[in-house]
Every structure is written in structure tokens, then in C-alpha cells.
Image 1 (tube, rainbow, N blue to C red):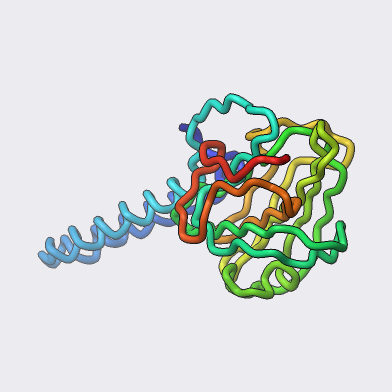
Image 2 (cartoon, rainbow, N blue to C red):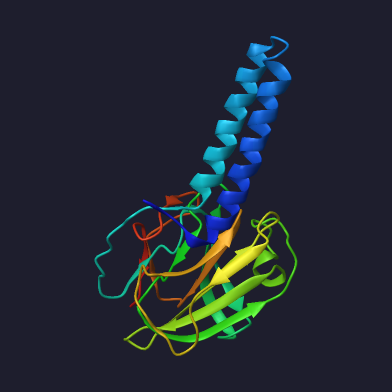
Length: 221
């Protein structure tokens, strides 16, 4: 496991603040004998430090690519599987699979397939809760399209939530990308949407807890 580079500054600032709180905690409560309160607040500081650090963790996972396989782009829970009208790029019907990421999930994002990055566009927007039906079209988001070697295209979106305030991505149109390679990061709670061809074989269902680079979402035909 490693810590993501997007977390270096936040972790450093967070730990400095928590250390200052802990020093103040010591002098406020131990001097007057409230050891139980000092212990309780110390536990709270440790928990906060853990939560900040674990948010930016990136587990080491080796992915062996399989032909036409769509691999999960993020840790989280499948909250939507439905046929929708995609209006930004394809302008036709697609199967939408939405994965909600809580603040406890790994928030690095990974390419679902290998191929040519045909499209990458950032959109300013709102910060509705990530499971809101309109978050896919109204929230701050970034849309990507990869053309697979077989010619089919897969669209996926990073979507900010009510807490997420920064979407980071590291790819541009024209890049050749590999499945399971990192393409971005979303800070503090969010959602990833996949828009797939209608004939895609789907291997997940609503409510499934999925893992980035591990769970097979489906297969292109």
C-alpha cells in the first residue's frame, strides 16, 4: 500500500493540527487531573489521524488484462444499473452503471479498459449528494471516452458529491491508456458513472460492493 500524492499536503497539515490539539489537550486536562477526558480526546485524535491517512491509501494490486473485459474503475457500491439517454458524447442510449464512493473508500480512479483516450472534458457544476439522480448531469464532473481496440467506446465520469470539492485527472485526448492504470482521484466522497454499449454483458448488480482493479464490471461484445 502507498499514500496518494494528492494527500501529501492535506495529511501534513492535518497531522500538524492534530498534534497541536493533542498538546493543548494534555495541558488542559492532565494538569487538573481529568485523565479520563484526556484519554478520550486522545482516542479521538488517533481516530481522526487514521481517517485522514486511510482516505489517501492506494493498495498495491496487480491486474492481468483480459480481452474485452471492463474492470471496475473505483472502490464503492453499485447504486444504479439502467438504460439511459447519453446526451454529451454519444447522444444515444447506453447502459449506465454508477458506483458510489463513501469517504471510507479508496478514491483513486482507474481506467476500465485499454485503448485510445478519445475525449476528456471537465464541467463545472453543483455539489448535489452523489446518489442524487441529477448528479450525473448537474454536478461538477469530468467525462472521458476510451476507444477499445475492437472499435467500441466506453464513456465514464468522475462526479463530485456534496462533500467532494476537487476532481483530479491525469489523462488527455490522444493518450494511449491501459486498463487498471490510474487516471484520476476525487477528494472526499463521490461517484463514478460508466456508460456502456447496450449489448455489453453485465456482471454486477445493484447493491454489489465492488473493488477497483479487481471486480469485473462486464464484457464488451
